[in-house]
Length: 511
Image (cartoon, rainbow, N blue to C red):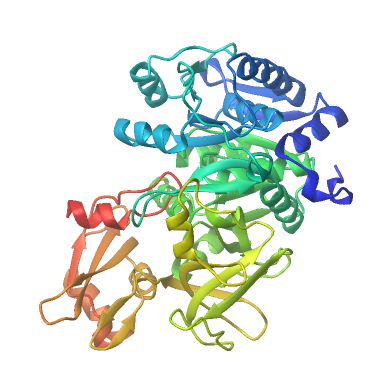
């Protein structure tokens, strides 16, 4: 499993799989739900059979290096096999969450200029419905459906054709989704450093509910596990009751997900009267893909009796850029320290001037994992790239003297009130610490006087009643007057992306 001794610039996703397949083909790789909810285990050899069949099918269908293969999917072994088969022939896998609307799926297929579209119809009713609209037919691998090949798709040529491994579509939480081109070098490098940061090894088993159509599921879960030769307990979606059963009985050693995962898990535990989950093998828990507030971190650490690790990453960098150290139990919500191969600086967004430790500014980054750009969208690429190869993230953060990163919020979400900058994440952190609040979202709206009003939305814990007067009294003690929400609304649930982020633009559109 020591691929670190190879020249990582020449390693592609399928090389990691071949290393596992040749080294120990009978080792368990994927644990899934079978008929009548019976656990089913697939070895590397089992997955290899699917990869061989799909490689042949793709070749017969005329898929070439630089072509895009769109996969409308929920997590399953067939999706994993398609990613590896695409890598073998040099095609780019383009995973799209099957739970998206028909219009979104059609738009992604057009944006990707996909030569062929696959659907994981065996595990997903949503994927099956999309397959019917595309008039898909059976694949050589049972349970997969595929659309007729598009003879008009234009394959990429030149350096990008060989460099790019996949396209990850951004979630579209602000503006139109864009196709992030992820390189083999970037994603396999991240797989290595991610596995090493967690001491991930062959005896580990990670809980794999995060969609592999998202960089968190693809890079942190799948590719890191391929690097380490470890196993995945694969689920199509997160169900807290199922997760507790898996933690107790199926040897999960690593549990990772967005803060919303842990919030839902704790809420379920509260409803069923469980203070501490039965998780005898669990040794590493991690929250990423969104801001982590101190109230949730404390609750999780009390429940699990171990440190909740945190990091900062994004699709445009093929995974995380910063992460907390495995042997350090931080008493704050820092995203930790810079990964090998990455550079990060805090700058004044107007001038690009680097700011000293302790000052807030825009996060700029560059390094091995940085995307070569957005697919066939030079204008969008130009808006985020800066001189010297720096990517302007749009995130606001600050670095402390020890190099620890703290992420404050998004530039686009920053609210200007009475001449002050107000960061929604700061207000959300205070709201989430109120005893009856499970989670919250804060947005700004233009006001008639040129200011912005602050609107807060809260979801309550199970069994709690909404007491706005008590909540406002609490906020008056915790926040300056200019940070006080003009409106506080209670919602039954938040609109969420597949990666566990609150879709604020959808929230404000609905309410």
